[in-house]
Length: 88
Image (cartoon, rainbow, N blue to C red; front, side, top):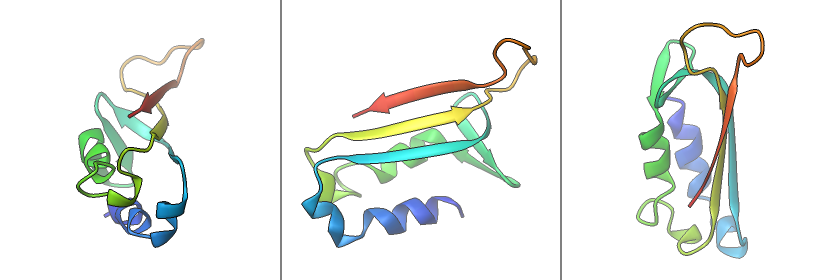
């Protein structure tokens, strides 16, 4: 599962010495999900990996997630992708 890479990274001890965590994800998607190969990943599952309970080294520190993914629906010549920034 692709979320294993995020989970493994958040367990690295180096994060205790850092002041911020940034995660950039680029993929296909639909509302609230990312499509990675044949796997559909819920964004809430990614956010859960970055929670203080699962990522204690970054507790109380800013975490930024940058998502660039199509959100499904009708193709637009002017806007074929969307970008979302989430800081928590």
